[in-house]
Length: 316
Image 1 (cartoon, rainbow, N blue to C red):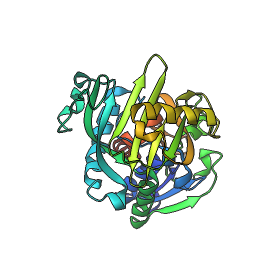
Image 2: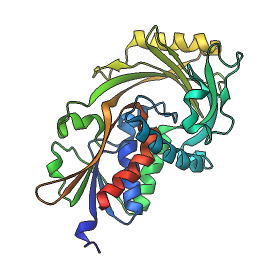
Image 3: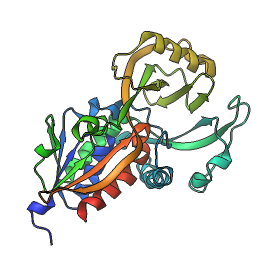
């Protein structure tokens, strides 16, 4: 049996990975504190388009398993969309084929090839979880607090500051300096938020020649347009030229978007790494450090699977 002290865990980071991990740990009976330099609604996760689908994440086999575990949770949460921020929404994944999705076909009833009327190219029609991230992050935090967790806004300049028997590092891009791990780097994503002119389905379209991915995600009170994938770009300032291009690309796919009123601009830095780091590191002083970072733009997609594995590593 663990001692009371041995049950203590500090989770560093409050994006979707950190909060989900904290929820799993707290609901397993651990005494959990989340340390974060900023409130969850100001993290990169709050800016995410947040469609469930593995995006630029390795290792592929593990990522698919984590994603399927997360899919099960989101399907349950979609029964309470106003509370959880999770809905299941239909749309087209452009430049994708059914034979590339055999790993998930059994879990997605209705997955099929998109018709020519639905998409002018090769694509898959799917019904997937789509998350309203400000709502979902708030829901995660409230669920964590109900489980007895403690949330502390405090800067962390060294993981050694977290004096608990188990520390879980969910710092995303911050791991580049805190670990330090130079393999973690930013891939900048810019979004334009507009009034929704009546779009009810999501769309992701990739132009390999131009090197662009264009997407539009309908939320209850707005339409999210994207995006950019700017490698090693640390700027959090919206680029007006990029914003104009995003709107033009989205309007080329859905003409009704052309006149939509712009509500705002968002920029986030995806914490990309060659492969997710999810592992247990015993420290010389007997404490345990569990790493759970490097999820790139797929943090939402794999959050619950990774959280469960991190919690298991923390309990060994």
